[in-house]
Image (cartoon, rainbow, N blue to C red):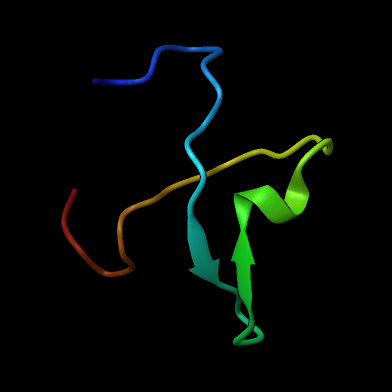
Length: 44
């Protein structure tokens, strides 16, 4: 089911640029902005 504007983001984990793991749950009760962009040097 797609998310709508204002919906809470589902929990996920990612690797930071420093190489450590970070999950959205680690940032609970903080304001977070998620920004996704196409991979560098790809069309689109």
